[in-house]
Amino acid sequence: MTTPWRPWTPEEAAAQLSRISGQGKSLRWAVAGGWAIDLHLGRVTRPHEDLEIAVLSDDAPAVLDAFREPAWRWDIPMDGRLYPRDSAAFTQTDQTWLWSEEYHRFVVDVFRERHDAGTWIFRRDETIRRPWSELVALNPAAIPYLAPETVLLFKAKYSRPKDILDLDAVLPTLDDRARGWLHSAVQQLHPGHAWLDRLGP
Image (cartoon, rainbow, N blue to C red):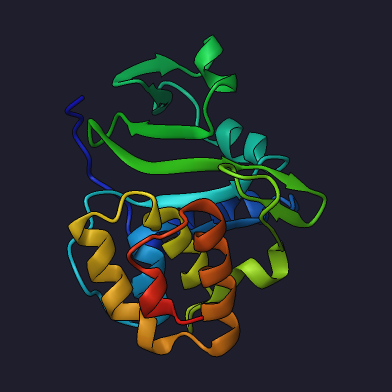
């Protein structure tokens, strides 16, 4: 599936989502993916073809409802196709793309994250959980982003060249606690993974 993107920057996403928070609605969200790595490092380490954000599922309706037609459209990517928001695909995946009529491009990829109150639940293994307060950090501009060890856990499944670049860039910045959490989670999900030796015991 080839789709056109003109992704928001993290700053643009924060500005757009601040409109929702400004209406007095609680909104738990964070930049995810490769951009989260760069926010952690304080520099852009590689090009990014999209912008991913994570939103706790209870807060996702506020985000989805804030961007409405005709200026915006939500699509659900699944199995190489795009489906409308009101289709059955919405309940079969956690992923949601926002289309901008102004740009005629997709601008952000929203993941509706599972949780139990304030505890995040990893979508690939519900036994892996973390308090949202530990999962999210803020950069100097107060943009929330997922902790890099959590981002790397998602990336370990595919270990694509860009994922390895992200691992190389961020691994020296992880403290023992972050490394230990990531090592344990990768070992649980992917026994014998090539990254385990680099993460330590």
